Image 1 (cartoon, one colour):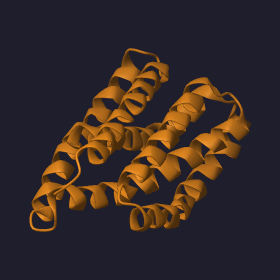
Image 2: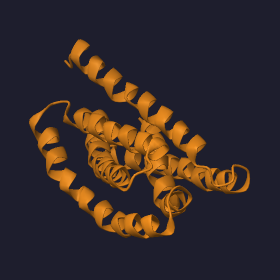
Image 3: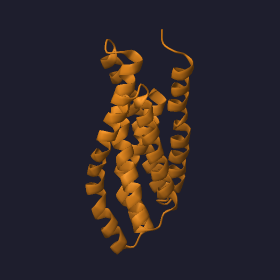
Image 4: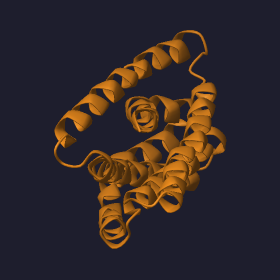
Length: 186
């Protein structure tokens, strides 16, 4: 759970801190201005994903896992578009996917922690996982430094790493979902 959350958290954090530099390396100044002006409004609109997340978590026993699937899928699409897209419309799709993935990760995380640990140790579990994820998130500073210093602002390698992490991340909810279906609680 901790590795899963931390791996998606670093994708969120890295993109939020480097989005404008990534856009600057891919587009002309006019395209950059057009696309860059859309990032903040679209990132706020990710909250539109919240009702779907709430519905899934309330309606289904494995609702938090379904929310994880949606978040993972959003991050996979986001990183794929981020690696290969060179069009304004696809970049806007990347913003939307990043925003929806981000908005789904947190409610899914809190719901899943409550399902696993219950509310007696919920605070300690969330606190510990959040601290570890924050420490892993500090690696985004190192990745930014490496990209700017050694890779001449080419973010492709980092985005490929994030794509691999997002694809592998599907394994956690899939495993836990399988475990819930095979091993019935007493």
